Image 1: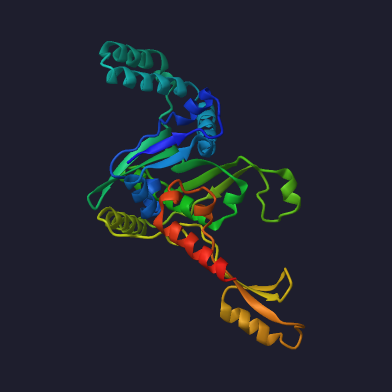
Image 2 (image 1 turned 30 degrees about the vertical axis):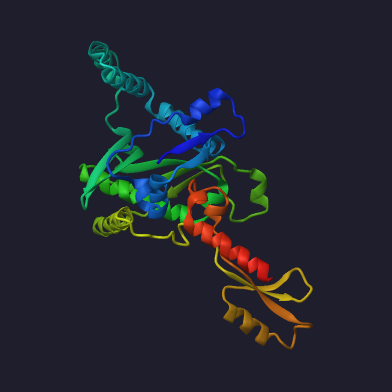
Length: 336
């Protein structure tokens, strides 16, 4: 099965080519990003043909650009060395051994003094768990500080969403496990989040809105044994899905909002009180029956899968779970 890339918004060809250029390294059976995500999404990608429009990949392209700029500023002369190393690898793949050997010689003769052994960037690591190979590429590790950092280009609303930070915590802690397995200790871990849509005006109206366009999210490092149990549990979950078991996405996977039970006056548009359960809504009505004037009723607003509905899942259109959810919502709408 494969993904078909579309260009429904007629973006320029050069723009499309840049977006579709993928230098991401993926090794083994599963990546760290896939491991912490829903098994159903991974399996739907493997077993279905689906479309992905290049417009939906713009954020990813912006993130890649930010990574490149930060990498150049940090590595200085080392960046030139890495470019030549990549070029030598390409020449080897093309069978040009002499050209590859010459580039390696240039690196050793001209750029070796620029290489900073204290900083490791964009390194892909692997580890074996329960017969599977997990791969992950971290952004930056400083040996002297025992510090792990990852750059994220995201929206301001995402950093206010608890599940976003939970996924960052899980990802960085898995990278820390992998680094320790390579004799690299981790005592500090951060996410450096660059907010692509940050607005200074929103600070004035929302106390929870990020105060700066770049924020540092410190990662709470989890005990190694506890993390190994977590990793093993995630591998087992994905292996069950791989073996054919149907594992639906959880509410957290779907970024689902909770069911809401609105207490409303008949003929009115606004809710008097929003409750988490029908029982709580009934209790509110009973408690305030002497104060409430007119007839009231309880309106049930089902949990909405924000990720599925708003284009954050590339396989939502071929997902049986989301199809069933939409059909159920349509049936309830017809009854009202």
